[in-house]
Amino acid sequence: MSVLIAIPARFASTRYPGKPLVTLCGAGGQAQSLIQRSWRAAMDVKGVDRVVVATDDARIADHVAGLGAEVIMTPTSCQNGTERCAEVAKLLPYYDIVVNLQGDAPLTPAWFVEDLIASLQANPKVDIATPVLRCDGRMLNALLQDRKEGRVGGTTAVFGPTGKGLYFSKEVIPFTTKIYDDQEPTPVFHHVGVYAYRTAALQAYVNWPLGQLEALEGLEQLRFLENNLDLICVEVDAKGRLFWELNNPHDVHIIEAMMAKMEVN
Image (cartoon, rainbow, N blue to C red; front, top):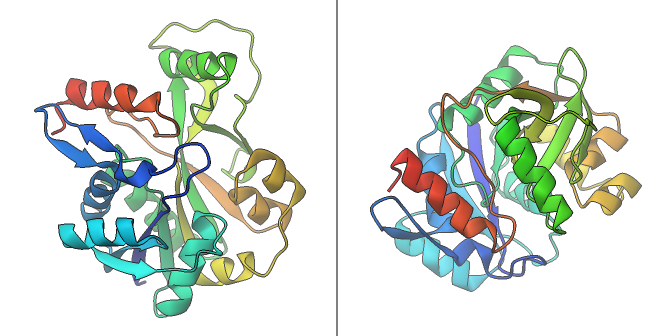
């Protein structure tokens, strides 16, 4: 199966305008933009035929073109990353699987994406695959603290015994009153903002109206669930890697600290 990675990037983010061009300093002090680090992460994924950055903003397009990345210009009418990926799939219709590697997760290991691709290849009836990472106590406490202070630190997911996605939320779910030690595994799963779609699922997505749950949560993957597509959550192994998404300015120093600890330049 042919595979395309699309990295959707928009300048006019509601929570963090200009986010793709925000600078992150690595362990050695090397400064690179968020979108540059996300593109580098995509280029490390094995088994991929093509990587593109999808944007509607000339500032982002000029920046990534200067890095040597391929740019696909998409309409300003795209409401989210999934719609932007659907536009790419329409312009480049000859790929079986389109991966949406959202540009706010520069620490995404290549094997997360490789596991998604393998899941779709092994399960022909599955429409979408997305990774989840079991939270340890440290990560769970960080997510809870963010919510306490009025921030969204990440999205959590609940799924059935076969991996079938049941719900995603910017609140921390499922609810638990237990206090976990930093290294202790918890029943909460952090959703990693990456999706592998079959092209037909992307084409269907843009023809459905905005769903009520999608509108409430601001999570585009809920439109697939509201329309009964088969979405599976793939539990991935961090293998000692730290992971965090850049959702607001507060996250910059968190990610930089993680890069320093992992010696990522």
